[in-house]
Image 1 (spheres, rainbow, N blue to C red):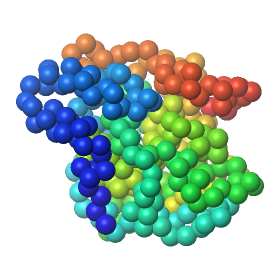
Image 2: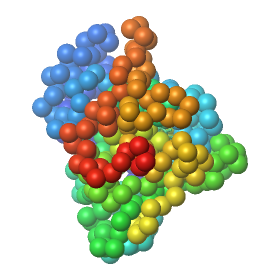
Image 3: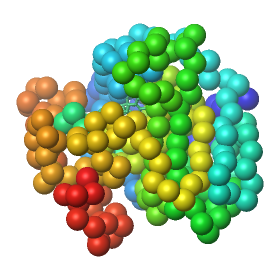
Image 4: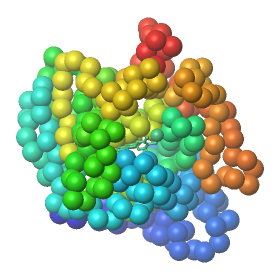
Length: 299
Ligand SMILES: Nc1nc2c(c(=O)[nH]1)N[C@H]1C(S)=C(S)[C@@H](COP(=O)(O)O)O[C@H]1N2
Ligand SMILES: [Mo]
């Protein structure tokens, strides 16, 4: 089934957004966004989103190549319908779920989040998605589960990048169960009021806004509830540089560069550099998850 966001987005929001997007003058965008603030999720930032152009033309999605333009160039070949997700491990209702079934009954929201890559660039993205906790509640997490492991599709015919032996495919990520259940953690199925562009991880991807971008795994085909910390792609590649937690933290430098500041994509006019905030600005919401941890060790 093809999901059509005009069917599921609250109508006034949808109409406003359409008018806005086709309204011409880019300068009008900021005030118009402010007008629909009431429809935003309580978790949205009030920073101005990056343009659709920025969000869809500067991407990391190594299954399509390591260049920033590779995903936009090659991801068009990806077949995203039909799509199913295996949910297995320590759950009451394991199975292979059709995408429509995964999304069914989950309240979709627009969540405007800051997004910060470990490479020290950032964007603001108006995602459409639902809380991962809603899906986990539905499938029934068993008490022995401690972590959620995620995997991306591997389809060599459509993904030129997976020919590279540099990564041990599939791309893998993981969250501790309390991180996965946190209300900020969403599965996104679209952005800017439309279904997810393929280069951004169609048809469904994770978004964890207080962690470096690589935790936000794209084009998910498997979600496993497990009792041990699962292997993750970047930790497998370079354990000294990328830990399991990967919280955005200006006080812990990457071994090869500083994490104290970031370049906001699309703001070239003003140089675009700004200080990186602890937990990417979501400190009030998530610091409690790490209260008893030493974040220089658990990076
Ligand atoms: N499957 C998969 N997911 C992925 C990646 C990837 O290479 N493959 N790259 C990650 C990284 S490093 C970042 S910064 C974000 C980029 O998301 P965006 O291209 O939608 O901005 O996706 C993350 N998710
Ligand atoms: Mo990244």
